[in-house]
Amino acid sequence: MRELIEEYPTTFSSGSFVSAWNLSSGNPSLLFGLLTTTDFGDITISPEDDLIITSERISETDLLKVVPEALSNQVQIELSVDLPDTGTITFDQHRQPRICRRNSQEMEGFGMEYPAFCVEYWPVGDSIPSSGLEQEIALQDSLKDNFGIDLDEHAEYLGAILAAVEDRRVRIRFNESGEKLARRLHEEVETLNDEEVLDLHDTWIVETKSGFTNELEITLREEEYGQLLNEKSVDLNGSNSISESTASEFVRTEQRVPSRLALNADSTQRYELPDIPSSGASDRILKITYDGVLLDEYSIPLVRHVNLNVNVRSGYSSAPSAETPELIFGDSDYTVGRFSWDQRLALSGGSDQENWVVEDESDYEEVMEMVHDSLSGTVKIVDPYLRPDDLTKLVAASEQDANMWVITALYSGEMQDKRQDFESTVSTARQDGKDLHISWVPDSPTPLHDRFLLSKGRSMTFGTSFNSLESNLTIVHEISEEKAAQLEKIFDYWWTNNRFKSQNNVELIDTTY
Image 1 (cartoon, one colour):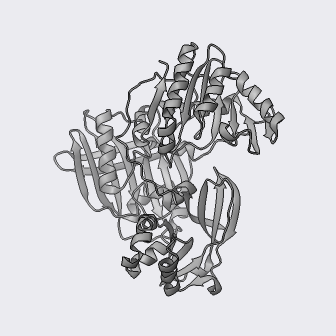
Image 2 (cartoon, one colour; image 1 turned 180 degrees about the vertical axis):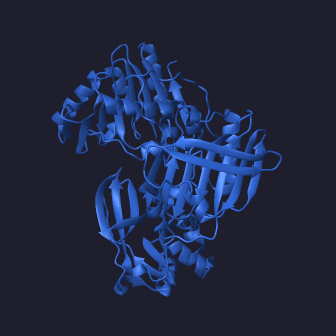
Image 3 (cartoon, helix red, strand yellow; image 1 turned 135 degrees about the vertical axis):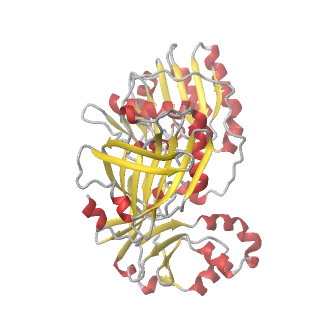
């Protein structure tokens, strides 16, 4: 493995070892460790008593010490840091390595700018560190403020050790400033200087090493939650290039944001992006490959790309409250968090599960009959665009013992219009002696996309929301109990985890409890 990384194309004069330590007991425990080719400088921080975070410069040799010579079951990890008033702290454990390549978008969450080859060591059993909630919050805040490391987003990395070697030949950036400047475009276009206008013009920015551009292949693709809908290559020939003056004039005269790519090497070259309209696409992804190997990619949710609305909320409110949803399938060994979500569930069932194509009224009636037969006992439903009238029909069709937990993600304005209707549906359920609880993850981007229903009788995923199931051509999949148990754990995480609720401004609309 070391030979693999030594051949990895990167150069750095000094990197960093960032580590966080819990000193509350007589034996300091490592809460997080990152060895990286990025230089964070020499820093020591103590955000609260018994918590120390330090960054020390390291050499390439120091970094390679935590890279296994061969991929084996266990690797001996030996680390140490010198802290003022504390002395030398050491870490000596056997850990199992996990090898992966992460793109620049993922590495942003660890304070880095480029794609990287990563060796990750995850804690297990007694090696998992313990810390109080206040210490964990202080740790997350300090890492993010001082290093750009987002353990709030990557909470599953608590206790882990990472070694990251960046590939600095190429990286992709999405032009966030373009969205901000777009707000001023119609009123203030004449006041924007040339630099701002060109910044507004460039949707995607690819930065490469000099002389490397001609060997790259850049593709733009649209996906529906991981499923490819359309893909086209970006033409890097001169006939597709755009001059700086043409780019500037386009923005000033058309007064709209185009879909363009800026390629930066020795100088900036701009190119038209291919038109790949795909009905129902959820993500647009730019990919860069070299000699058939993926070097970097960057994904943008389409709703984020076009939605310029701003929603300011006061944060999560715990009133009214609802208890934790009862488990339908028992405990699952599925680990919830970004690491596991990236693996993506294959939901389309095996030979024992059925699929239905809904293309006419008889198909719709057949599927809804199966849905209604599933509405007994504990039922969990995720539908980002669920409307009160559809929910009212589901509650009316449910059995007397139904205990329904529902998560939706309507836009703020729509929820404001429909809140009273949702509350009326809950009131009706209460009068009928049924239990109903509605949680709202407002606006985009949210982790909610797929529509699914979980129950002991039958669990299903839907290609569209209940409000368009009758009118849209779609496919309904029955899913196995194993996959349903994994989805249930994700559902319960969304419903109960206070950090998730705070991050996403989750609000409990109403409950019969």
